[in-house]
Image (cartoon, helix red, strand yellow):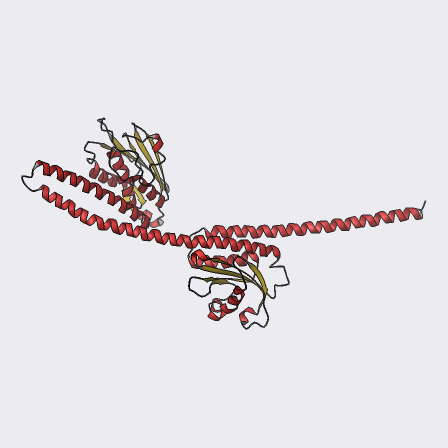
Length: 440
């Protein structure tokens, strides 16, 4: 039986309704695809933004920093060219780096002129997109159709910075390079750059100040030590004078003790300054011989005997900075001698050494006074003294910590009051050319 007119009409309506539903579904599906693609692009941009932040945390020269900025603008915002301009205190605006523009062009003093004009139309922290006229006098810019510019000013450091990304005329219609989303991300990039740039400048100033302070401390300490040693020499000459009254000898001993203590304090300050100023210079040396020499010089400084034990099961040699290791071991062994328990007959200091591929472990152990529980977390702080039984500056363990930091190692202290102290040090072997290591 053939379908009636009413059946045909009903089927047609259902078909048209279904067709509308399919069309609507296809439209929704396409919208979802477009949204997903947009989110993917934004995610890529934010990942590149994060990558830029991570790279700026590295130790970069000014030239490398500016180059990274321009490379990142091209990479994140998919523009064909970029540049960064900086105006310092009492200076004119100057292009520091550019990407996608030949150096002989952007380094030409005339090339900066249109950017000065564009910059004058911006307020600090703002983002603008400008069309570029085809009749520009600067022929180098005639191949670009649009430019996105942002600037910030840091009055505290007297600096103004402008960044720009340029879109070529050929690529202008291919994709929305400078879409509103991209402009938003460009604003985030600008604020991020402002924070990074300000921190970078302040860190440079801080490093300069610290360097000047270190130089001053070193110079003053060195200048102070010269007359101090002369005074010590004069005291020793007076000692040799015959028939000196006992009272005068007592005074001389007190003066000699004070001068010696002050000289030791100055030497600690000098060592701290040297550690912060000088680069690490690794070489092969015999650690056992170094420790024996240190102990021989200081074993009687406490006025009572103390025994040295050495445990070197594999090797006696290590590859590191011998000057810093000597200061490190001198401070640790001196502490063991200085803070020995005076009421025991078997006072000792023991140094153990282990060498493994690429690393060393040194352990300095004694059965001395020990350290109170509440002081353990503070003993590596500058000027902190856990004991008052002997005079000291509180710099010794602080210097040890700074030396270990300079050598990229770790230091750990374990101690029980009245039983003794153990200091454990882990130091990576310094980098060495393989043939030099073999020859050594």
